[in-house]
Image (cartoon, rainbow, N blue to C red; front, side, top):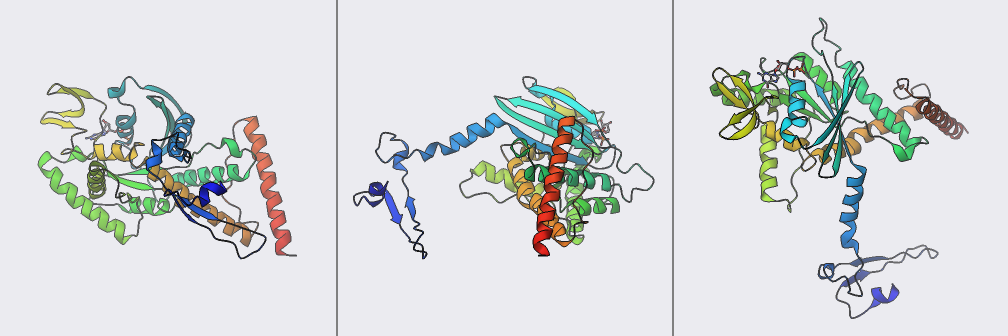
Length: 381
Ligand code: GDP
């Protein structure tokens, strides 16, 4: 290693060496860069780091991907239809899809999607009936509670005994459905988004965009969008910001990202009906006056939404923001609460199902209590 780094002939090594001020510690920082070595594996100075991305990719593929999507909005706005259109379409018959759903106060459905050896476990968290009650004042509470619970479970797992097998159930994206019949956001929309925006990535969608006649659609979409964006700004609601492209991203990706940014809130149409159109099989809504194609960009922003959610585009961005911003904020809040008072504990968890889970949970509780005791011991001594 020494000889490699100090080799005066090498044009591949650009090295700098710095000694630490502390005599007992010697540290060095060497920068080695070569693009020509990538092909020549027999070169004596070939290290092999070029294969690292492949290794990371292989590991990630083997492990599979997880994505948790929450859909929120008034009942009847087409949430289920849209989710089915997005992920359960019969245009992808060759995919293996396993569906198992469990009904709690919030409906949670899990789909295992396998495509060319890549597994995606998609969990859709539906909030049925929101907006149906006479008093909808606090209807956002169940959704907020769910998001908090999953953050808390993850946090406890992280500091608990079962760190190795943590399942990520944190909500990565919340599709917020806005009614096309209003003229913007209703007070309940504002309350809901305001309650969630610090905890989860909100992507607003304008539901049933075909409710407007074809002529009105273009004008109204722009008008409603402007209004919604103004209201979002007025009430300081934070929605998910699609990241800027890297300079090395392809032109097509840059163009798609630009269009996606311009299209938010996305005006969407959902349908599970497949019709024959000019020799193509397309998903569409059939009306006496014509056919609205779900995937036709001049009819709806469905394609933008699907592109945003698929792993190829912004699924990882949504997960990164969840991990780096929303989860870190939650963790920081918990630590702050803990250092201020022992009674101000984070969100209490719901009872768990299995005996094993219960035992792990109890052990984790013990560990947390023990940590508290140590912290207080140091605080007051
Ligand atoms: P949810 O209660 O929000 O889940 O709504 P559903 O998905 O159950 O849809 C309620 C009704 O709206 C159904 O009759 C759907 O066929 C219809 N629907 C769903 N999506 C659309 C859409 O994009 N446009 C129109 N016009 N109707 C839709």
